[in-house]
Image (tube, rainbow, N blue to C red; front, side):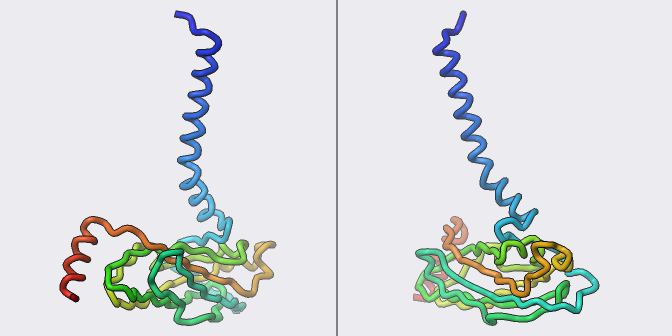
Length: 191
């Protein structure tokens, strides 16, 4: 059976749509991976520990907190700013409060500014690595352990940076079925 020119064109267009759909589906995780590896767009890196020898040069870290639209939590840094040696481990805390009468899950997205600092700002431990679940009226202090990679002083784009802002935005996320069942029991016990 021989295909007509219209059938060939339709087949090629369908294949093109399929390829473009697959590419758009893969774009988000690929872009996220790219940003984390390169620090593009202020994305930070993850590390297991700080370098053994910090530099004498210091850098100021500013802490910022916000909430996505509809997120009812109160969320703030417990310190506005700190000065750390480049390469030394810093420890900061954020506070979240659930002022509602229901259990709420949240996930924090983050970035640093200026963007050129992203590839040099490494988190060792962070509340943003996991989902947070707060019961009604619950308050929690959440740590973030980090360092600024000494390679920043040799980076033409990063060597002049004297202040980095670490920003978090909390987004409400849906409770899993198990979390929702526990929340219903907990919320009922409180009432």
